[in-house]
Length: 274
Ligand code: MG
Ligand code: MG
Image (cartoon, rainbow, N blue to C red; front, side, top):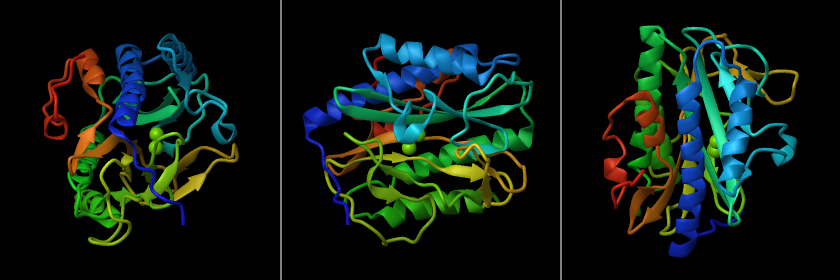
């Protein structure tokens, strides 16, 4: 069974740098996303922004993926390939971005609203993001993978949403995907024990309707089986002094969108300087 690769304090600071490049890239996307924009526009912007920060796109070429961003609008769950279709008012767009710098990966995702989005979809986005923090809160010494998984699953299923099972979060470091797998469903007290210095990407993928998914013939795009919309939020989190410490941040997105939020404060030892 693959081992969990724990990181030194120095390595975690390098990982923070990679994660923050991704966070800033999502912030740039927040500034421009609106009706008429295409996912290829965002992909180009993201690649330039990542390279301008001395990093490489983390997904480009990974397992053969053709682009910088995985962009998954509406009924697409994850792994959507950027194309030339313009966004419409009311769309939601999940943008997953990776960066590689100093030999370490960052991997971080946000689901954006295009113009005015229907209230029931807005609520699903809020619940999905809240479930991410409910999961992060359980990433601490004394807990196991199942504690994070259970927290996310309960938070979303009590609202009647479908929790995708086939795709999971993961350890992250010198490889994009390291041990352990971090599912968004599971049982308390089960699975691998958390250890000081581990770093994981926690990423609920939540559907408005059924949890069931299907894959497009492009070999990448995952979409909901019932055609209802899906949300995806992801943070990179380190286990430091027994507690979860966020390496990525949505604050660049919030700054661009004029949102004030204190959601990250419990998971940050030092205040973030943007
Ligand atoms: Mg990701
Ligand atoms: Mg990931």
